[in-house]
Length: 302
Image (cartoon, rainbow, N blue to C red; front, top):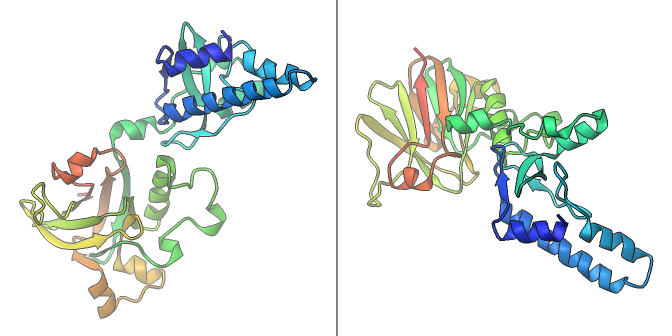
């Protein structure tokens, strides 16, 4: 079929699009196809009497065959929210298409491999998405765990300078957030990405579990959780929370004095390994705001 016919079928819901577990906005893809078609139709009218017409009409009326990339002239980057891949649409035939990482296409072209052998390659974040949380472990040496919106020292805040702005470090995507979580956890710093919000920190009566949850219940009153003590709130002016043992912060140059303790949440907890499960990117808003489910659970590993 021609690209125009494909667009008409796609925009009217007549093309089934498989996602390979990628997360993307199909509406944006369709809108861009519409813009491309209108652009090439306009160019055909303007250049109907010169040599350029052949090029523009070829783009507009070319056939979309099985295992062909659905594209007109040039493409707009459609990113997977999970893995950051630039996605391409491949026509499977029988009014079906599938989204794949465009790097697979380039790699197959370069190595002269059959694209059809790789079109069902799943998003590399599939296992994490299916779990429904990001996870890391940190070590608490002194037994004094500090919670804050963020830590000032860049070594406890971000990737090292030589690793920033590279593939896999963009925290607008799940893989970037997971990579930063693991990177900071290697320095025994806990991290979870959030929105522009306020969080409440609760510690269990035995001090072995910490919950990060909404400050308010579904009746807009101060939240309470049975068996837990509210120890403070975090205002996420920077869209994250962070935690670390005082020994880690001192190692990276933070002075632990009265002013620091007053400005942050310091919880006495058992020393040892702590597991962090961060659900924010996968939980429905109503679970957090109405159903009182925690955004993050920190548990002593015994």
